Length: 198
Image (cartoon, rainbow, N blue to C red; front, top):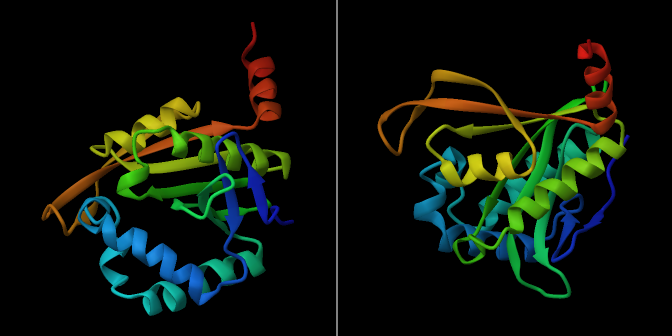
């Protein structure tokens, strides 16, 4: 199974990163670099991207294209509709078609924060994934990353678990706690509701 190359939402469009181009890597790198200090506080991979060539080879080729071709991950650049401005990226990965599950990760540039764009992007992507027969999607956030936690909440994800001292945070020089949020497809939610009904 696969997901579409373009996903439309009210104010944004998600464009697949299935076929990498160096032009796209330059645009993505510009947004990462301009937001580097904020992003690296929560995303350990940011420091591995030091130039557009890193973005192209390490992310677009090694991850995006490989995962897409294998059907286990689908990454998208987030654009304003009818505009050339990139707002960030969103991806559904760790997909198991047997378990009908996946995980969503995302980031936004500094200039795109605070407008609800990521809420739109997550809703658009998980709706598409559920239409492709996934039944469960998780979002993993640092417990202290309140903006990311609020996105999950606004999109209807339920806090399922907090794993304490989960990973070493190089930025803060401490162990961090990971919050795991989960959302079920409408079909799965209806089935669970019937099972739990008195």
